Image (cartoon, rainbow, N blue to C red; front, side, top):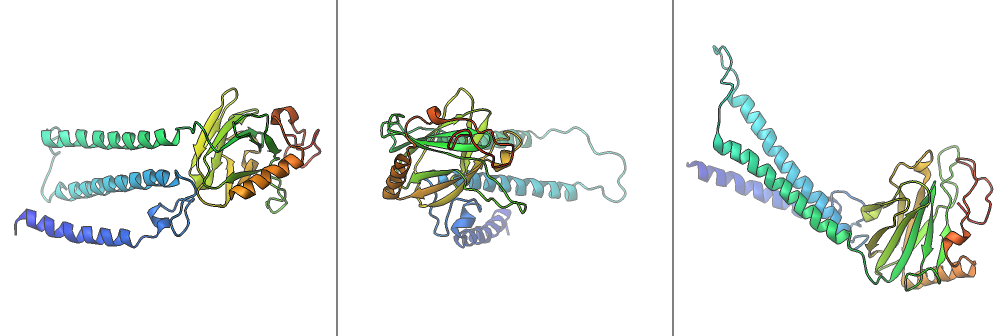
Length: 298
């Protein structure tokens, strides 16, 4: 049997097995076991599948490269092993131009491909909505979060806000206080302005598969559309001091009517206007729930 025919008969079963294996995968498996997906495959935001696709496909390519590399290493170890009766060293310098070209071109193509797909997806992820349905300012501070919900025109005149405090735990390590909560309307375009009050932080909603840094003196932005109601954990992803691990928050994606009711409750509580005018840094002792200088300040 000719080598080409043998190769064909070897590739066909492998392709069938691969197709059957992928067909049997659950949405969780197809998305690389990443958070942000339900069993029916529904995603948390309009961009979550894009991020998981880049991640999973990159690992598939890398696994393929690894299999080929490991196979060649094993083959070389067997084919060029020292035979019985052989002495001395093998030839230390020998050129094979086709192989040299192959080893140069293939890595270049792989790197170019990784760069192209990453740049394409990053451009989409970093494109900010010009006229979003919801404008929110998220402010990081040691070690909690403040959230300001700006008006329809993204101005602070009609804004409402909440101020959060860092997570407090009992002797067992369980959180005993209410964490800062960010409320978002489902299926509405959201643009978040990210600011820091003190040091560098990073705003990370785990199930959304994306995070953005916060800097002093520079505003950062993140635009997306929540596509599924639910509650999602969030945290700071940048080491920002002693109680960095307690800089937690929750995200709640609700219907539009629930979102409007939530904003109305903040207005009734008098938490209106520019949050910076009401802000006073907490004088809590580290890791305790000490008294504050003003209501909600931190």
